[in-house]
Image (cartoon, rainbow, N blue to C red):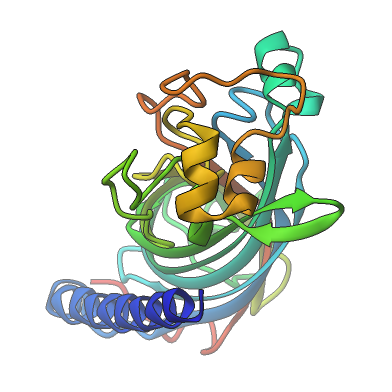
Length: 294
C-alpha cells in the first residue's frame, strides 16, 4: 500500500509540473497576439461541487458540497477574450441507497472523492466588457456587465473512498474490479486525470476595481472511475485471496446478493462528469482606463 501511495504522489507531482509548463507555454503563445494590456485581476471562488456518473446518472445538484478556489484573470485588449488560471478544491459523493432505480439500490455502493483541479480556462464575453468600470448599466459607453462562455483543459486529482463499518476506505489501491489480478489484467486506474471544463456565466461590476461573476461549469472527464465503478464483478473468493478481503467487501456491499463473475457492476460506455458552480469575487490589479484599445 505504501509503495502505491508514493507512486501516486510522484505521478501527481509530475502531472502538476507538466500542467504548469503547458500553462506557461499557452501564455507565451498568446502574448504576441494580444499584447501586454495588463488588465489583470485576482479573485476567489465560492460555490458547490457535485457528480454525475454510475451512482448518479442524471440528478442535478445532488449531494452538493462546498467548493472554494483561487483564480487569476488576464483580460485581453479587445475586451472579449479572457485567459484564466485557477485552482479549485471540491468534494463529490453519491450513494446507491438514494437512487430510485431498484438495481442500483440492490447494488448498494457508495463513494466520496476529493477533487483538486488546476489549469487554464479561456472566457469569451458576449459583448465588450472592461472589468471594474463604474456600475452604470444605463450608459452604453460603460460595459458594466456581460454574459460569457468558457472552456479549457485542466488537470485534476481524485481520490475515491467508500464506507466500511462507518470508516472511509481508499478504493483505488484495493482493485475492487480485480485490477492487477488473475481475473483482470488492467492496471489500477490513475488518480491523476485531465478534464475539459465547459460552461457559462454572467459578470458585472460592483465598483471601480471590484467585480462579481456567477457561473456553472461542467467537467468532462476521460475516466469512468471517479466513483470506482465501471466494469463487471469478479469472483469474490479469488478477489479476496489476491487483492485482500477488504477488496471483496468493497466490491460487493450487498450481503444478500449472489454476485456472479462477469455480472455488470457499472457502465463502462459512459465517462464520469463533475460540476463546479458558484460565485467569483475579483479585484482588478491596475486602475481602469490604463489599458488602451487597439
